[in-house]
Image 1 (cartoon, one colour):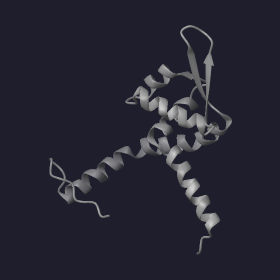
Image 2 (tube, one colour):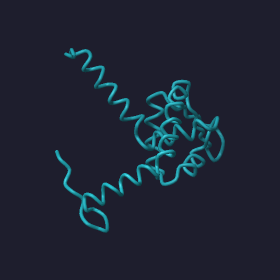
Image 3 (cartoon, helix red, strand yellow):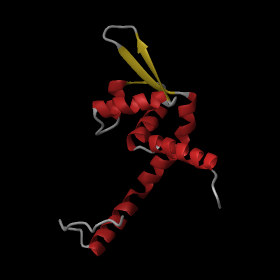
Image 4 (tube, rainbow, N blue to C red):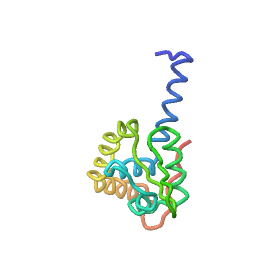
Length: 134
C-alpha cells in the first residue's frame, strides 16, 4: 500500500494529536474533569495524585489550546479559576474512561507479566536491565 504525501501529512498530524491525548497527565485530567461539571485548579491537583503544579498548568494550557478544556476566570479576590471539558473534550471522555477501566482491570496481569519477564531477563533483585534494541 502506497501512501501519498497528503495522507502521510494527515497521519503525522494524527500522531501529534495522539501524543497529546495519550499523555498520562492528559488522560488523568480529562478523566477527572469528566466526573465533574467544573473543578478549580487546586481541586484538580488534589484529585490527581503525583502531579506537580507546573505539570498541571502545562497540561491544562495544552488542553485549552487544543479546544478540549475551557478555563473560566471569575473576577473575585482571590481570583477563582474553574476548568471544564468542552463539547470536544467530552467526545474524548468515553475513550479515556475505557482506557482507565482497562488499566485498572488488568493492572495485576501487567504486574505478573513484568515480574515473569524480569525473572527471565535476570533483572530482578537489582540486576541491570538488558539493553533495548535500537
